[in-house]
Amino acid sequence: MALLMSSIDQTIVATALPDIQLSLHAKINWVGWTITIYSLGRVMILPLAGKLSDHYGRRTVFLASISLFTIASLSCGLAQDIYWLIGLRAIQAIGGAAFMPSATGIVVDHFGDTRDRAVGLFTSIIPVGAVLGPVLGGVFVEYWSWRGIFLVNVPIGAGLLIAARACLPIDPPRPSVRTRLDVGGMLLLALALSAGMVTITSLGDAGAGLASITFLGTGTISIIALLWFLLHSRSTPTPFIPVQLLRGRGFGVMNLINFFFGATAVGLGALIPFYATSRYQISSLDSGTLLSARAIGMITVAAAAAIALRRTGYRIPMLIGFIVTAVGLLAMSAAPQALAPYAWLSVAAGITGIGMGLSNPAAHNASLQLDPHQAGAIAGLRGTFRQTGAITAISITTTILARSHDPALAQAHVFAVSGIFLLLILPLIFFVPEHRGTW
Image (cartoon, rainbow, N blue to C red; front, side, top):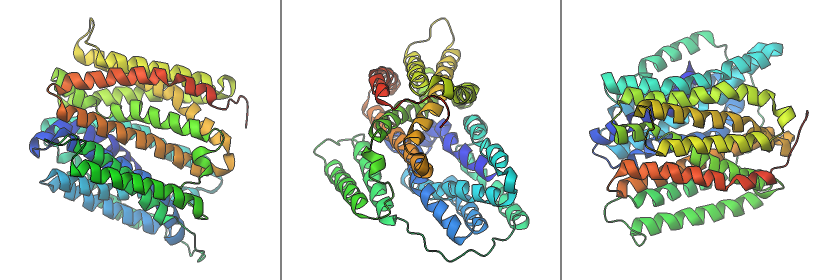
C-alpha cells in the first residue's frame, strides 16, 4: 500500500495541472514545479533513506516515512499558494522516497530464501501505480477538486500507519556500525539542480530576460554548486556519485543517453494530459488515461524485451526503442488523421510507451554491465540522470508555454522537436559497449 501510494503520486498530479493553475492563479512555468520538485526530491533522498533504514531500522524509518508523507499530503491539499504547494511537495517527496528502501529491506529480512520472489512481487506494484495514478487524478479533478489527489492520502496513510505498527515486527538490534554518507555532495548536487531549474523557470515570468537578477543570480549559484560538487566528488573518499561512474569507460555515453531519453520520453510524457486539455479540450479524466495508455504500452513489451536481451544485446533494442518513441512523439505533435483527437493521442501515447518498454531493460543492463560490483550505485546514477533530464525538460517546456501566445501549438512544436532530437542522438548508441549471452 505504501509503495502503491508513492508510485501513484508520481503521475497523479500531471492530470491536475490545468486546474491547479486556474485555482491558484499561477503561471504554468511554476505549476510544472509540482512535478519537478517531487522527482528531484526522490532522486536526492533515495540513497539517504537506504542508509538510514540500515542504521536505525527498517520499521522505524518506514513508520516515519508514512507519517511525513501523510502530513505533507494533508498540507498540500490545503495549500493556498503555488509556492507553498511546491515546498510541501518537496516534503512529500522525502516521505515517498523513503518508502522503497525501508519497505524492500523489511521484505528481504523476513522472507528468507524466498526473498527474490517476494521482492519481485512487491516491486511489481510500481507499474500498477503508473497506470492508476493518471486515472485517479482525472476522477478527482472531474468529480471533486485537484485537492482531492492529495487529501485522499490522509485516510490511507492513517490506516497504513495503524496497520504497520500492528503487523510489522520490531526491528532487531543492529550493530552500531557508522556508515559514511556524503551529505555534502548530496546537498551540492541538489543545490545545483534546483538552482538550475529556477534559472530556466524564471524566464517564463513577465518581464524576465537573460539580464534579469533572478536569472543571473540563480544561474551563477547553479554553476558554482555544480563545479564544487565535481571537485568535492574527486576529493572525498566516499562520494555521493563516484567520479569514475561519471566519465569512466562507457559511463559517459550511457549518462548522456539516460539524460536525453529522460528529457524527451519521461519529462515530456508527464505533460501529455496538459497538452490534451489545452489543445483539444479533452476532459481531465480522459486526458489522464493517456498516461495510462503509455504505461500499458510500456508494461506490454518490457518483460519480453528483458528476456530477449541475451540474444539481442543492448544496441538493437535501444535503437528500435528510441525510433519507436520518436515516432510516438512526432505523432503526438501532429494534427489527428482519420481519428478523433482522444483516439489519436491514445495511440501516440501507447507508441511512446512501447518504445520505452523496448529500450528500458537494455539501457538499464548496459550500465550495470560496465561494473556489476557497483550495481546499487549505477542503478541510482541511471535514475539520477533520467530524472534530471525529465525535470530539465519540464522546466524548459513550461517556460516556453508561459511565454507563448499559443501554448498548445508551442507544446506541439516541443513534441516534434524532441522526436527529431531523439533520432539525432541515435549514433550515441553505437558507442555503448555491446554484450550478448549471460554475465
